[in-house]
Amino acid sequence: MKNYRIHNETIEESKISSLVEPILEDRGFLLVQLKKNDYEQALQIFIEKVNGQLNISDCSKITKEILKILENDRFMPENYRVEVSSPGIDRVLVRAKDFEDNIGNEIKIELKEKAANRKNIKGEISGLLGDSLTLKLKKNVNSFNDEITISLMNISKAKLVFSEKLLKKNDL
Image 1 (cartoon, rainbow, N blue to C red):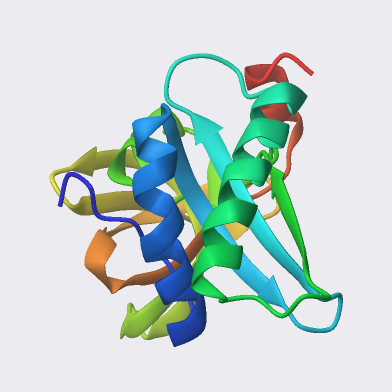
Image 2 (cartoon, helix red, strand yellow; image 1 turned 180 degrees about the horizontal axis):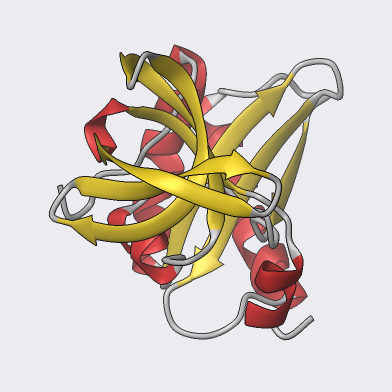
């Protein structure tokens, strides 16, 4: 569970992830999300730095390394471009640490199987114990009420909700 990453990648995206993830980790980065966008002919790779802030130079170096790997394994059509960047302020949450770091923030979750008769849940993270996430469910625009506990293994996608609170937390 420690290295478990929540993702809803296609088979092709998973193959590419399995190639690039070890290289990223060797260089002190974590893969957050990988998406192959056929419409824009782009491979979008969102990463974060294990220690410190991600910068443009980091993204440039990683892009060059990933391009070499993908060219050698002929995974991407020639007309595709690789875009490496930060996941952004309202990022997806993919590891237990992401949820832990965002206790008190609001998220939207898509579940694999229903919980509380819902597959889509919006709430505030109130805690994480092991692989069990506790959320205060959103009652209305300004308040939260009932709590629900969800296994991280049941989450298909989790994304932070953009808010003033999130801006303040990130000093933006």
